[in-house]
Image (tube, rainbow, N blue to C red; front, top):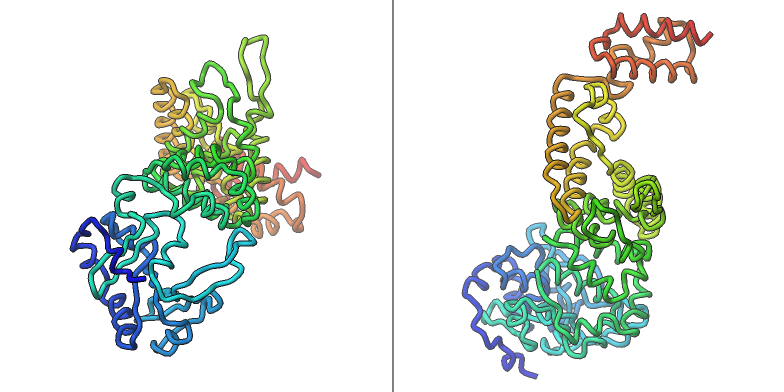
Length: 467
């Protein structure tokens, strides 16, 4: 099949070709010199058409992987069984994959067999969405677009290549990818593709997808302007029920007079209101996850209450993120943020109360907790100017207290553990820890007490009382 018959009907801008790095063109030229062809494929084509800088450059070729390995000086055999090698040019990696057709996807991720082919259009036909099924021939300066991906990209439409349900039944992650692209590219999913996302065959294949891949897609989704678009599509498709049923429990969970949305609607609003920090947005996603399980009706207030939802929510977030195999660092950060997301500040707080707040939520987490609290307030669906003003006042007071200097942890005390034991003549043990905690309490109330002499005097009194 002549790929020239599928050159884009719409004239691509010349800037599309001018933005291609010389080294990428050089790879294609080297392949041409060896009697083969090379094309730029994948997300970098989509990025170029959107006028964005391409992050990674992927190429397709009609050369076999062993041939590519001979053509270039530095090559890493990253996926020979799937036809992929990584060519290193000036230390930068470029994935070069042989054109291929694929057999049945038995594991919901990879084809059971790969057949090398020579037709770029046939290779593009196996890809997921039309705007990902385009190729650039940088030597001929042509865009090969057999499925009108350029048109769909311009119209902001997510459309599966070929028969949608077949694409989703091949690779279960494609449902999440459709949701992510809808959010990150601010697109609508066309009706046939949208319907196919919820088809039993698609869900059966999604059920085979590893939790690590699901987690990775979630994290990529968090960089979108409105990640809620993706999570709404996950809910629509049924994939959210399979990967995180705890979140689905929040749908339709009515709140109290302080909220204009149910828990799900509020969560989506908070998610979008957070800045695009993936872990912070995960905390936003889970901050009220326990509300359905803690909701009670109060006869006293005539409304719903959610006592302890932040504690239970932290436990649920920990369970979910362990299940999704999130990194330990990310999981701990999310759990901490969920546990402390209720910031109940009052102007009546003393400076000591502000210092205790900082100690409780950790100095390194204060700023993002306030950011999360602002998003939480903004997501209530009602006027919240007073709450936002309070949070800004707290931010200022925290900055003032920190700037003044304060002992937040044992290491900040003017008397270290070795000096303490030497002066008091005590051995390492429980008593040392108790005294140090008491000294932290002392300097929290009286920052000026953080001197060696004052702390030593207080430590002697504490030790005497403990004997």
